[in-house]
Length: 125
Image 1 (cartoon, helix red, strand yellow):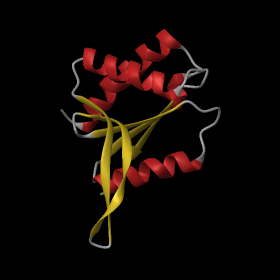
Image 2 (cartoon, one colour; image 1 turned 180 degrees about the vertical axis):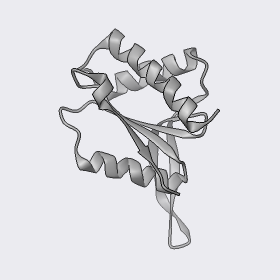
Image 3 (cartoon, rainbow, N blue to C red; image 1 turned 120 degrees about the horizontal axis):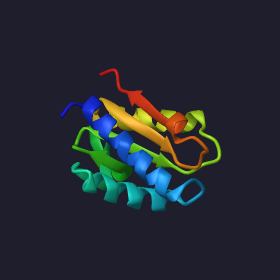
Image 4 (cartoon, rainbow, N blue to C red; image 1 turned 30 degrees about the vertical axis):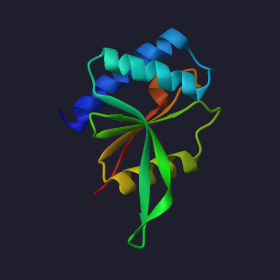
C-alpha cells in the first residue's frame, strides 16, 4: 500500500473519530480512539514509538516519540490545541527527516472543521 493510499484511509478514520467525539478533548483521548479506529479499519498501527536520536555518530541517551505510525510508512502527529503554530509543522518535518519517512499527517482535533485541520507534510528525501 502506498503512502497516498494509507493517507486516504487514515483520513476516513480521522473523520469517524472526530464525528463521534467532537472537538475539545485531550490529545490522549483522540490518540486512543484513532488507534482503535485505525486497527478496526484494518491498518497496521503502532503508537507512542520511542525512536533514538543519532547525533555526530552516536545515539543520544534520549529519544523522541511518535504518536502513531501507520503501516511503518506514515507518521500521524496529533494535537488538540486552540491554534496550530509553525513549530508544530517544524516538529513533524523533523520527525520525517529523523525517521527517513516520506509522509506525515498533522491533525488538530480541537477545531470546528476537521477537514481544514488535517495537514499533509511531505519529506523531500
